[in-house]
Length: 285
Ligand SMILES: NC(=O)c1ccc[n+]([C@@H]2O[C@H](COP(=O)([O-])OP(=O)(O)OC[C@H]3O[C@@H](n4cnc5c(N)ncnc54)[C@H](OP(=O)(O)O)[C@@H]3O)[C@@H](O)[C@H]2O)c1
Figure 1 (cartoon, helix red, strand yellow):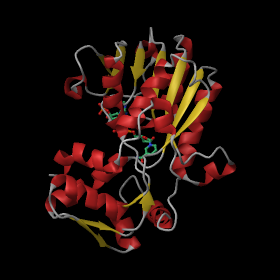
Figure 2 (tube, rainbow, N blue to C red):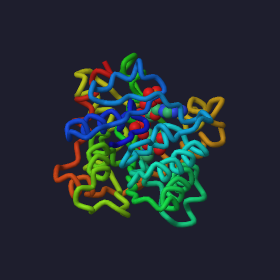
Figure 3 (spheres, rainbow, N blue to C red):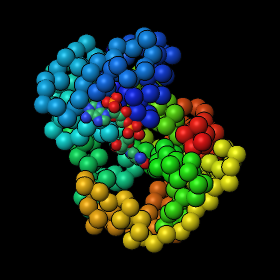
């Protein structure tokens, strides 16, 4: 049986479907089973991973665990990993990030540091592990959905910022193979996952326009304006400014180079952003 954290999320939902197709028993964790809308075959269990409760029952009888930082970080993840060890779980597949380099540079940025800490905790558990280090997710484009629905105009400081957006279904396909690991090929592997093509923000916005059949465009705003829009009670302005500047650096070179890992591991080509946009047209209409 496989336990999936973040089971109602972008990757989680696709992953649960893949595992059900494989005929594998799945325990899906969510804070709200009534709203989860997961397949009937799945055991849906309530879990808020930020609560200070004993996670042992969540792992009872499990063979493998899919761990997504989006479902809670810090102490809660460490408790979950400990519980996995005690429950006799064989392997953990960790949804990490391409920001992790495995060098001291990981200490210098928040995204790398939080994922690197988790990688260390999983390695230290002594269980078999696989790390999925994904680059920029195609789903980040959903942040543009309100603007595209309202006016078709996305206000962004870096229309030329470049990335290699990866489809959540490809992340889920690789996760499913690593969780099942029928060939033993995934233990101790770091999978660096990107989409198939480098695209600017402007090209992504145009692809969404094509998918929804309406004109879309980017209107360039200043970095300060973007940082102020991004900052909030849990995200200080200084951090927002740092992040916006970081995105700006990808105008000259994408933060992460394209990899062929999706195709190598799954045997099918990585899904394109155009396909992603067509599948998500409803989110932008
Ligand atoms: N975005 C990127 O470009 C990028 C790049 C590299 C790595 N990543 C990694 O990928 C993660 C995002 O993955 P994703 O897009 O699949 O996630 P997501 O769609 O944001 O889903 C996360 C799920 O976690 C659950 N959750 C949230 N808080 C929880 C809590 N306290 N306890 C239990 N469950 C909780 C939610 O389900 P319920 O509401 O049902 O509880 C939600 O559906 C990021 O956090 C990061 O670690 C992202």
